[in-house]
Length: 383
Image (cartoon, rainbow, N blue to C red; front, side):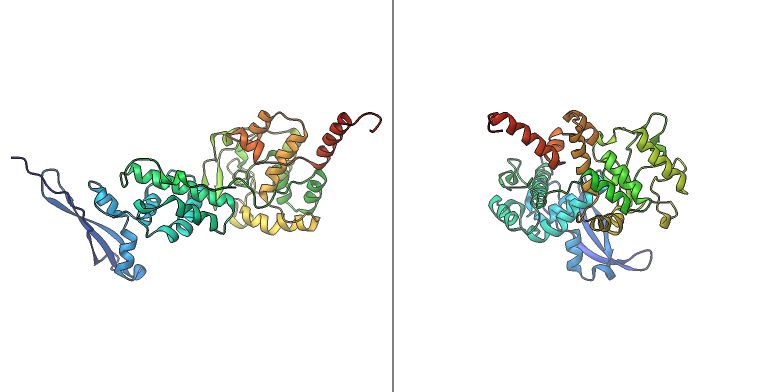
């Protein structure tokens, strides 16, 4: 006779016990059904009682684990957005670049979870999310990132079989103007670049010259090592990025491409190598003396203490690292470089990013082009 065993949903329970360090900890316990019948008790340490304080806090910390414990009957309980967020944070960010994972954690912990954490995933309505994003006091691009992340969360919920597989309701949410900038990027003219060089001391002068001449992201610039400079081939290799002191892969596979190194720029780098005490192949090109050369300069600190004040002293306002990447794209345009060459020098995976996001036309070039059109349009006697 076939016996049917009811696979009921279980919450488990929480206990306290001393740890090996003699500190009292909260422990989550549950029963795991064995294939041949019967159950095995399982447990997982949640955290110290001195930190979590109350059992209610311990339950909030471990709530998302119930999704895994009850994987065989995922639809017998109410899955909240908070549980979904916690499981995503635990399982999905391990293979994501450090800077991307940091941004995702910020969006989830500071925006999505506080607003929607207690809502059942099944009951979330696109219109409510759309209204929330419309009223949120953040930049349009941030709204786009939040919308995309919520869409990813719902895809995960379907993949984990926590909700019925179907159309992702977050795809129905409309977020307008996500590509619209809150302010136009600052682009430096050639004379302004020279003024900035004169206003900076070393090594910041060489940093800015190299950044303006290559368009490197600041995370890539500060992650350069002397072994990445191929002097004989006049090539600069971009092998890694560094964000908040964490070394990781570059942003895309296109970012990993070698950059041609003009002899004049190679000369600037060689002069800096002669001056720096950290010149071994494995040393950082811009090693921080405050870290005894074990780490490069911190880009945010360089920007706030050196680059931005120098820009203000030169009279063209607040600038930062991304100013140089926009300027590099603009100067490429001025040289008449084809769009494909610009894309590859910018190391963008999508040429639309090169065309639509970076750079601005120089004022002189716009006037010259406009003048040519005027001379074509107006009759000779009027002109």
